[in-house]
Image (cartoon, rainbow, N blue to C red):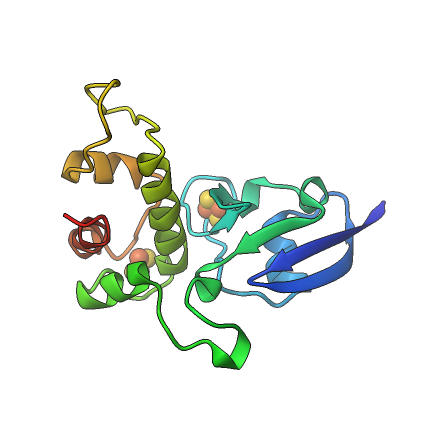
Length: 173
Ligand code: FES
Ligand code: FES
């Protein structure tokens, strides 16, 4: 069974008809040719398909497209300033990844960057993680917190030291 949905992706509105079993990841990649979110495990295990969905990080391989009719999605490709061909200014998180070599092959990088941006906002809002000690204080994004909060994003190249340094810098530490 097909269903008509609308998605706003990196500021561009789209209308499309999808089979109700289509994941958001497949709708983005296969139907809209938005290839910034990558397919790794397709089972919610690697984080490489992460986007910002209504401002929060989300695994698109575990989401059904029909469940997000009308949603606003930002991929790593849409994080910077400007739109379309005008887009030239990198997001501070992207710059930080560049400065700290937070990647090797780059396959996991769009998901890492989106996850890191979402994670900083979660911490700013005071959401605790598994390693947060004092639940009454502001979140202190030390290395243990960053590692824990980014643990859903795997990197087969093992670029973790650079990723940690990049997120640390973007977190203002
Ligand atoms: Fe979505 Fe791996 S492809 S978590
Ligand atoms: Fe290659 Fe992370 S940079 S998988």
